[in-house]
Amino acid sequence: MKESQIEVHAIINGEKVKSEKKQPRENPTRPDEVVGYAPVNTREEAIQAIDAAHHAFPAWTETPMDERIERMRKAIQKIKDATPEISELLSREHGKPLYDSEGEIGVSLMWMEFACDNAKEVLKDEVQEHDIGKTIIARDGIGVVSAITPWNYPLSLSTIKIAPALLAGNTMVLKPSPLAPLAVSKVVEMIADEFPKGVLNLVHGESDVGVELTSNPKVAKIAFTGGTETAKHIMKAAADTIKHMTLELGGNDAAIILKDFDVNDERAMRRLVISNFLTAGQICMIAKRIYVDRSIYDQFVEKYIEAANKWIRVGDPFNKDVTIGPVNNKRQVEYVKGLVDDAERKGAKVVKLGRILDEDVYNKGYFMQPTVVLGADYNDPIVVEEQFGPTVPILPFDDDKHAIDLANDSIYGLTSSVWGDEKHAIEVARHIQAGTTMINTAAVQGLDVRFPFGGVKQSGIGREYGKEGLLAYTDTHVINIPKNGELPYIPE
Image (cartoon, rainbow, N blue to C red; front, top):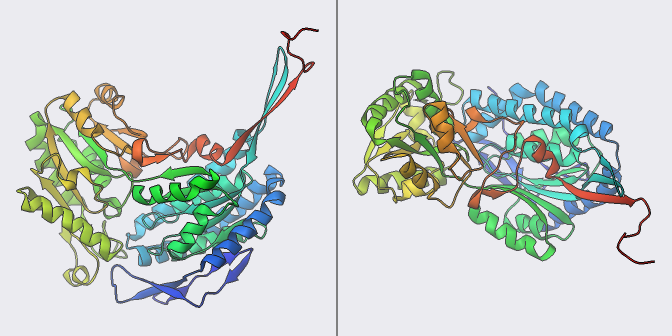
């Protein structure tokens, strides 16, 4: 494992731009270790990046689709070749175990390849001949896209935007989170090198950079993944120029365990545990609250804790026996612990799960032993808020309607899951207000990049992945060619 510090830079119009001000990124496993440095770019540099993208757009949007795809495939191969180096860097700066980092790269590549395989067919002109003439429905590039991405899955949540945007003929300025800026910068650089100058730009920075990326009149679309409250500010900043938006926001995803769920199915129970605690619970689509039919509640809790204790092993991300690493940052640890402590003060029972493999490592980093919370009130913060960490409440419900009402009683609606007999589960799933509902699986385990992903209510606007994820980066341009150009009801 390499322990050397690295430094990443902004990329503006194809050139690396060094910054006088730098921000360190620590290793969450060993916070006294600096993994590397990212620049703190200025608002003026953000404007330069937007101008470069704006200047590059006319030529790039006229570039043949075959060339766009060929360039993207070359970038894909570079990322594949660098997977060991990238995954190691991601684990060091993020805290997720090495297998999890490798998995994130795998999902990123899977989507990029899907986008390349399908862009030509999905984005081609649709020509319709009809009784009054002919109509061409074209899919035009929108313009400059500002992409703002979070720290929990920095690679996949960046490439989910880069691939469709560039293939559709747009240009982009991307800003990653300062809490995981290093690996994603390396990946963006690999991609940018395969494209003409200005097509893909990269900036880092603080709120002033974000304000410029969301308000600049030359930006035509914003693609943001992150918190709902931040999205509200983004929408306000973009209002004056009526920008296109794709927003994938918070979620408080419910898992409903029906009375016909087999609590003795060890593989299903393991899937559920993973859906709660993969990446230390720091996934927007992870199952964050579990509702169990009261008739099997006690049996379920017993078997769930048993399954969790088998799978959860907390420690250094580079230890191959570890399944859960540290939380990404100190602030998030404190927030999640605050939710757990609040529930315990109110009378809930908190059960610690799994094993800590090395107490010395655990005590030095941003670690938090996973917990399950029993006996919380339905309206407690740990139930109604997005925890985004290694804890999950389990609560009983009385019948299917009660479970559906509980699941839908939220400002969020990103994903959900229903566990039990398939036919019964599908019947319940149809009543849940969510962008995606999975049956007998949840979270990343049920993700398929071939189909659209996004939220309802305050969990977002628009869809990513699937054909819809490609079309989201286009304007629909209708070209009508009537036979004679005259309306039949207008007199001679």
